[in-house]
Structures are given as structure tokens and as C-alpha cells.
Image (cartoon, rainbow, N blue to C red):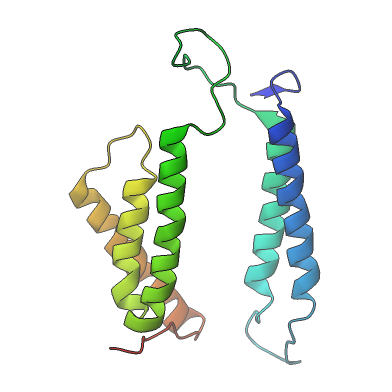
Length: 165
């Protein structure tokens, strides 16, 4: 990893925004009321973990950056564009998939919606690596099962059942 000479303004601004989002998350979690003498971690644990993670990742993003080793489309060495046309299409498709997942959670429930959504996310985010369809299916189903049993039996937090099922 390189420090300072390969940082760009976008990396610094983006990293600082992520760190500020983490600080805001930590500040907002103080509003979550937790009963005294609770034997469980409570409702603040996961938002606090996410807030600390955002702060650490934001600082890392602002300070360090791995230079791209690819050539630009014009054939010259140098910095690749932040988001090209194909990347913008994938980003739009990803966020529309998140909206679809939110609606599917409401109507179909966690156990039906999550395997399909995680399969779709794996396929969208696979980058240059080739992820086989059977491996993507197995990972999606395994991830859904792990989350379901962790939340239902480990944390006693029941996941959405859905309006239709």
C-alpha cells in the first residue's frame, strides 16, 4: 500500500464522509433505550459496531489507496476513471436491487427474499472474478441459513415473515 502520493481528493473526501457517518451513527445510537439488567447485548450493539467500522474504514480510505495497475481505455498508463459508464449501470442496478429486496422482505419475508437477493448481489458484485452459479447458489442459501439461525436462536430476534407467506 502506498501512503499520500497516490491519494486523490475523492478518496480523502469519501473517507472523511464515511468517518463522519460513523460518528453520526455512534451519536444516534445513544438515543436507543436499553433496559437495565438486560442479559443480552441490547439494541445498541450492532449500530455501535457499524459506527466504529465506518470510522475505521473511512480513515483507511482517506489515508491509504492502492494504485490501479490497469491501463485506461485510450491505452495509456495512469489513473482509471472513478466510475465509467458500465460501472454506473451496475451501480444503478445494485441500488434498484436493494429497493427490490426491501419490498420483497416486506411481502415475502426473510427466508424467501434473502437467498434470491444475496444471489443477485453476488452476481452483480463479482467483478472480474468468475463466480460459478452453483457456488453462488450455495453461498446464498448458506448465508441465509447462517443469518436466520444466528438471529432467531442466538439473539432471539425474529426476522420478518412477510405479508404473503
